[in-house]
Length: 217
Length: 399
Image 1: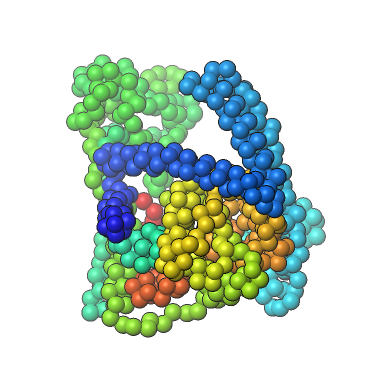
Image 2: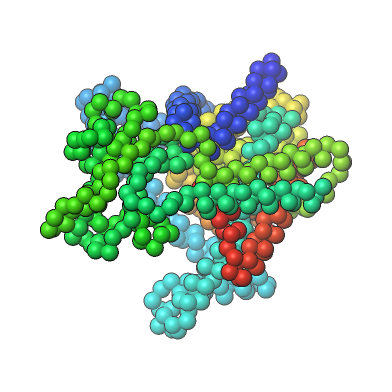
C-alpha cells in the first residue's frame, strides 16, 4: 500500500518534474507536443475532479438542511440556484446539451443578469473595506506607521488632479515613491518568492518534500 | 575549493554572456534567409539592410516558393518599408520571422520537414517595383536547446546544486540555526485559542489551482496545522475553490488525523468546496465567518481582489488571523488586517520551519545562500553599471 500511495506518486513527480523543467529549455516540436499532451491531461483530470467538487458541495449542503444547522436556509438556495442553472444549461435553448452551446439562451441570461451583477456587487464592497482598513492602518501610532501615512497621502494626492493644484511637486514625489522605494521592495519580494518556488520545486522533484502526499513524512 | 567554485561560476556565466551577446550577431550582407534560431522548427528569419528612401508610401514584399526558379507568386510578407527594423541595429536592418506553417503552399502543407524555401524580396513604391535582393533559401529546423535561455539554465543548475548540497550538509549537521518567523510561531497560539473557546479554525486556500507552487506550499502548511488540530481536538474547516485542491486537501487532512491517532475525529464535510468562482467564494466564506465565528483564520496561498474582503470580515468577527501569500499586490491588505502575515518566501519556508526536518531546513539555508549571492551580484552590478560596464545586465537577460 505504501508503495502505491507513496513510492509511485514520488516516481511520477520526479519523472514529470524533470521532464517539465527541461521542456522549458527545449524549443523543439517534440517538446512543444509534450507540453500540449500534459496540458490536455491536466484538463481531463480537472474535468473528472468537477464531479468530486459537485459531490462535496451538494453533500455538505444536504447535510446542513437535514440537520437544520445554523443558516441551513442558505443551503436551499445552493440547490435552487444550481438546479435552475443545470436545467437551462442542459436544455441549451431547445437544442439540448449534446449540440453546440447556443448563444442568447436562458443560461446566458442567468450568467449575464444574475451572476455577473452579483459578483460586481461584492467587488464594489471592496471600496468600503479599503476605507475601513485604511482608517485603521493610517493612524500614526509609531515611526513606521507615520512614514506609511505620509507616503500614502503623497501617493493618493499625486494620483488625483487636486494634488497638482496644491503643488506641482506632489505627482513627481508620488511617482518617485512608486518607482523607487516601492519597486525596490516589490522586486526584493519577487526575488525571494522565486527562490522559494525553485527550492520547493527541487524538494518536490527529489521527494524531499512529501507533505503534499499526506501525513507529513 | 571556494575560489575554484567562484572561478567556475564566473567562467560559465561569461560563457553565457558571450553566447547571448555574440551568438546572434550576423555580418553585413544583402538579403538573407536563415533558420530562426532557438525555435521549434516552424520559422524562417529574413534579414536585409534598410535603404535611405524608406517611407510609408513604399512597401517590401517577400514572395516564397519551394522551387528556386519559381514561380514566386505567394506572398510570405507584405510590410511598409519603414517597418520591422532589427532591434539594436539603429534601423540599419529589417528582420522578419516567417511561420512556415502559415505559408499557403499546398504540396508542403502536410510535411514541413527538410523543405528548402526560396524567398524573393521586392520593394514596391508608387512609381515602380524593384527586385532589391537575390533569391535566398533556408530550411527550418527544430532546435534542441534554446541558447537564449542558457543563462537561466546555468543559474538553475547552480541553484539546484546549492540546494542539494545544503540538504546533504544538513543530514550531517544537527541543529541548523534558522531565524524565528513570528507568524508560524503564532499558529500554535491561534489553535490553542480556538481550542479554549471551543470554536473551529478556518483554513482558506488561495485562488490558484494545484499546478501553482503556492498552492502546494499551502497544502504543506495545511498538513502541519491539521496535525496540531487533531491533537488539540479542535474542528478544522478547510475551504477550497478547485476540486483537485479539495481532493488533495481531504487526503492530507485525513492522513494528519491518522498520524495523530485520531482517525475517528476526521469529518469529510469539514474539507469542502465553497464555490468555484472568485466572488461566490468570498460570499460563502464571509457567511461562514459571520455565522460560525471561527476563532482562528488562516489565509494561505495566492490571493487576488478577494483578500481584503475576507480578511476584513475575519477581523470584524474577532478571530486571530494569519495570512501567508506570495501575491505581493495583496500583501498590504493582509498586513493591515491580519495579526501575522508571512510574506513571499516565508510561505515556502513554513513547511520546513514547522516540521524542523533537517532535510527541509537545509533547503532554507540554500535559499539564504542564494539570496546572499544575488545581493552580491546586484551590488557588484550596480557598481559596474555606474562605471559604464553593463555586462551583468546581459547575464540576467530573460530569454
